[in-house]
Image 1: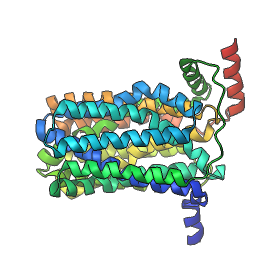
Image 2 (image 1 turned 180 degrees about the horizontal axis):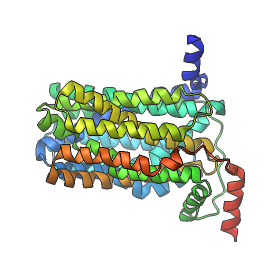
Image 3 (image 1 turned 45 degrees about the vertical axis):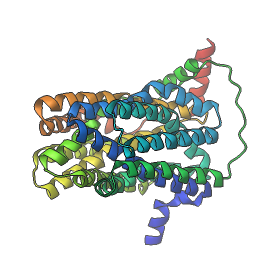
Image 4 (image 1 turned 135 degrees about the vertical axis):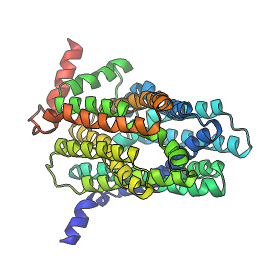
Length: 424
């Protein structure tokens, strides 16, 4: 029985290409979280400004929102394999430049923000392509939901261990080494891509303009309300709830009177909750009601933020912040599984890019908002309000989330409707 359970949990690894993809992304995600942790710690250590913390996160994520239109179309128009190679090399160069500036002692906040903007633009193309590529590396399409959950688990596991490792490296060697480790981690992705055996790419005929193709993505989601309403909920949560991580450095340094290691531990506890959630989703039975799961995890996440904001006993607070991580994980993971599982191959990149817009468009605005509000009312009160708002959003969408999914028209029927509407 145990053997069968393990098989169900890791069944996507039957695909050799997916196994390579998984390992490469896992290594890269560790480096990514080390860099993210080091960047926000450097900014706060120099400025002690909650607003600049929010601005730094805004600088990396908002460009992803602005350029996700092009990233989604690129994922559907061009060879995803080659596009991913380009984004990985570009990210490596960005990390090397950041490391050089820090190690040489030329740390200037506006330069860090500029490099964050560049990384945000790269991610606008990288994430839609990377997510859409999962469909190509999974041999048995029945394993796709499991593969998506496991892929998300790599990011959450990196969120668990990456910040803690980053805290240790920050104290021992400084931020520059964290950035160098991240630069080296992109090599793992390049190796995995080289070792993959994928079907030859067949160029697509490009008869439509980029914006016209992107508009088709919105029409596609409009005709699939089960996905559309979930994306609306994701946008609200991304704006008002998920940016709680903006003020985590304040909790580490001011509330709990710690250092870089304390900051890493808090982020790691968030990762514990996220990893637990993704393992739960990866092992769920086929046909599980994802909307009901999303409602329950949203409630858990809200309670976690409320508890974390008010408790001053560090070990107990870490339990609640782990619950917050558990709830936050479900928002993107369930939306991603739903979109990828129901989208047709020719629309998948654009559908994913709209989901990413809900995150990359709202979270940076939320980070600015949280940074500004916390500067006025304090970080604990801000996070308390975010937890309450999370509960309110879940209640507002309770009818949608607790209603069994309705039978919707097929992907082929939706695609035909889009073609008819565009030609009308």
